[in-house]
Structures are given as structure tokens and as C-alpha cells.
Amino acid sequence: MEDKITKASSTGVTSTPAWRGSPETVSLPEVHGSMVVPQNVGFWRKLLAFSGPGYLVAVGYMDPGNWATDIEGGSRFAYTLLSVIMISNLMAILLQSLALRLGIVTGRDLAQACRDHYSRPVSFILWILCEIAIAACDLAEVIGSAIALQLLFHLPLIWGVCLTSLDVIVLLALQNRGFRLLEAMVVTLMGTIALCFGVEIFLSRPDIAGIARGFMPSPQIITNHEMLYVAIGILGATVMPHNLYLHSSIVQTRKYEQTAPGQREAIQFATIDSTIALMFALFINAAILIVAAASFHRAGQVIADIGDAYKMLSPLLGAPVASTLFAVALLASGQNSTLTGTLAGQIVMEGFLDIRMRPWLRRLITRLIAIVPAVLVTWRYGESGASSLLVFSQVILSMQLSFAVFPLVMFTSDKRKMGEFTNPLWVKILAWSVAIVIAVLNAWLLLQTFGHWRAGGA
Figure 1 (cartoon, rainbow, N blue to C red):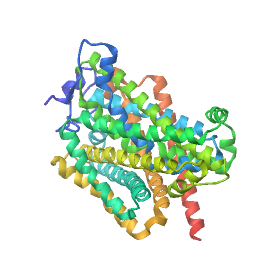
Figure 2: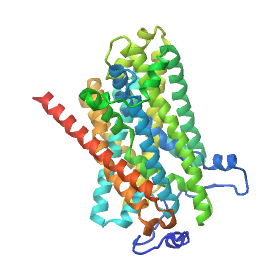
Figure 3: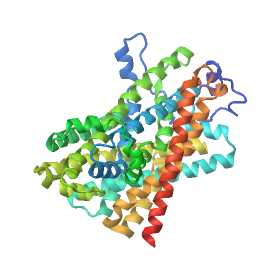
């Protein structure tokens, strides 16, 4: 195995005091460097070789946790919050570009970088926080998939939760046949979601001029307290902390030249892949809000529950297939997100703890961390608590987000760690600004959410 200190120093990154040592194992060792990037080929063939990791990351930006905020935003405020979705997506593009840069240049994923930089107690706390965030995110995805199965096949919610655990077997089977097959499945499910919502937009006949105005930021978003609350909810649900760990790892599945020019080329093509994939996620999230605005807001209905949206969509649009397409897209979204969430759980556990387990055991443990709470909570609260669980999961994600964003920005802005690939000044300013804005807005969202719950409890 190539020594990471040697690799880093070849690009001008000093091994000390930037990093304390070399990781004992590479990130995702079973697929690390398993996909050879062809040399002396054209731009498009090279881009195709690097394409894939961005789409695995993008599914986290269109998971069921986003659906509730997008549906509520569209049904209450029509197209106005489209600008918030766009700005949130631009923030995500920036942060994911930093994550892939860290992985390519240092040979470490974000979890390994944190373990190397921070003391053992701090790293352990960061690991616990990240596991809680992944469990919360997976809770939303599991609940979303279970709701979809209930809507499509009338399965009890708890049965649907248990069925989603089978994705561990699917993930193992696909990865054993090559990481490219896993990427192909994810892209196929994303295409299914896009097709479903493309038809939904056609059926809902939205206001094109209203959509165009919605992508222009409006002062009303700040001055209207209720609109601001939903807008911050959309922002908080968009940037997912586990995606930063995931992206910094899976970009290393490509076997590129371990030289400064080779890494520069890898960063270029991986950034293009990530940007295209996240623009695809922008289309999905915008489509959910547009359909909600064109159907529910037009009818004077405020919807914040996915189940209610399913029931009312067909009657409002006069097309029985509308609700079915909605549920199919929700199922594809949930399954896509659980696959990548399980993979992120493996990366985080290995990276922070530097442990070695058999792949099936690692995935079983990371899956149980999410499945067990989902089963217990679903058994306790049933169908009536599903929407509250989705909101709660986004609150937990908001609490953890800054613990991933701030180390990422700090590492990629440190010349000792990144050498010639350190963030230029304008990127540093932009990245720190985004990190601070996300922290402040999420803190505000948490205060408002807990205040709302206390008022409701009183």
C-alpha cells in the first residue's frame, strides 16, 4: 500500500506538523482505486471515467427529508422559495468541491483527516455526533420509503421499515460486482425520480412566469417571519453532513496518477461530475416545490404531510396516475438515500475509529444504528408521527452540520495540509462565509423549532 506521507509530499504537502501520521488503511479499501482512469483519451471519455461519485452524493440532497419542506414551501408560498433552493444548492456545490479536493489531494476522507488532526477524545466526540446525524438522516429515508410502500401497496408502516433493511444485501451484491454497478443503480433511480416529476409538472401546468420570478431572491423571504422559517428549513434540509464524508472517500475509487498534474486533473473532472449531479438535484427539489405550488397552493391548500400530498394530488390534478407517480418517486428517493447513507456510515466508522471489519458486518452495524430507532419510533408513534419524525431528523442534522463543515473548510484552507492545492483566497472567504451562514441559520432554526415544540407542549 502506498504510504500517504510520501504521496502527500509529492504534491508539496508537508507531512509534519500538518498530519500526525499515515492512516493504516485507505478509505473503502475494497473499492479504493478499483476504477482505472484511461490516459491519452479525449475530454468526454475522461469525464465519463470520473463520473459517478457526484451522483451518489446528489441523492442525499433529494431525500425524503427534503420533501416535507419543499411541499410545505410550495403549498404555502407558491414559487417564491425557489430562490432558496437554488442558493442552498450553490452552497452544496461549493462544500462538495472542497470535500472531493480533500480526498484527492491528501488520500484521506474527512473522517480520517479529523482523526489525524484532532486528539482522540475530540475525534471520538465527532464520531458520535456524526453517527447520530447519519441515524437521523437514515430515519427520514427509512420513514420515507415505508410511507411510499404503504401508499403503493398498503403495507403497515413498520413492515415497510423492516423491508428497507434489505438494502444492505443489495449494496453488498452490487459492490461485489464493481462500484460502477452501484453507481449505475443510483443514477437509474435518480432518473426514475426525474421522470416521475417531469410528468407531474406536465400534469400540474405550472405558471412559467411565476417560476421565473421564484428563482429571483425576494426581500419578502426575510421580512415574512413564516416564510423565513420555511426557507431556513429548506436550507437546513439541503446540505447533509454525511455527504461531505462520503464524497471525500468515494472520489478515491478512481485510480488516477499520484502526481500534482494527475491530482489537478482528478479535481477538475470530479468537480464537473459533482456540479452536474447537484444541478440534477436542484431540478428534483425545484420540481417538488413547483408541483406543490401548481396543485396545492393554486387550490388554496397548505400541505405539510407527505401522505396528505399523495391523497390530494390526483383529485386536484384530475389524473389518477399523479399520486402513483408521486409515491414511486418517493420510494426511489428513499431507497437511493439509504444505500448511500449506509455507505457513509461505513466510511465514518472506519475513518474515525480506524477499525477493520468484514464488509457485511460493517454494513450490518451501520444499518442497525438507523433501523433499530426507526422500528422503535414507528412502533411507538405509528402513522401519525411520521411527519414529526421527518422534521425531527432535519433538526438533528442541523445540529451536526457545522461539526463537519468547519473542519472541512479549515483543512482545505491550510497550506501545510494541502500544499499547492490549498483554497485560493476568494474560495477561503466564500467557504468561511457559507460555513458561518449555515451555522447561524441552523442555530436560529433550532431555537425556533424547540420554541415551537415547547409552546405546543404547553
